[in-house]
Image 1 (cartoon, rainbow, N blue to C red):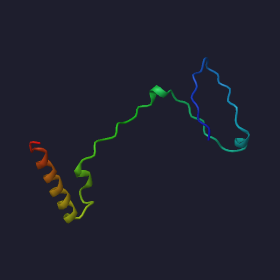
Image 2 (cartoon, one colour):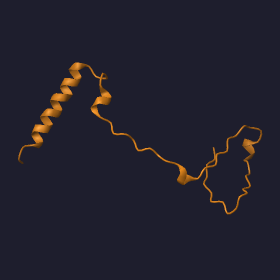
Image 3 (tube, rainbow, N blue to C red):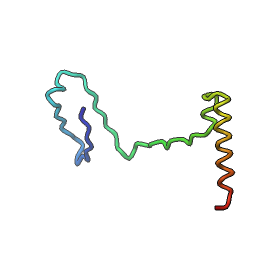
Length: 76
């Protein structure tokens, strides 16, 4: 696979195909990089895990988190 970025100085571009690609179907894409809009990953919440854990496991995690939060509130 070949991948490269160029900044054309004119409308025409000469494209040379490597020998191993001759006779094969290839795909050529052209787009301006600044046109790509990348989505930010959405924030994952505990609701995303609903139904993934057993009730027992979920309760253990909940109790653990509750304990850790209570420890944060203590003066050191």
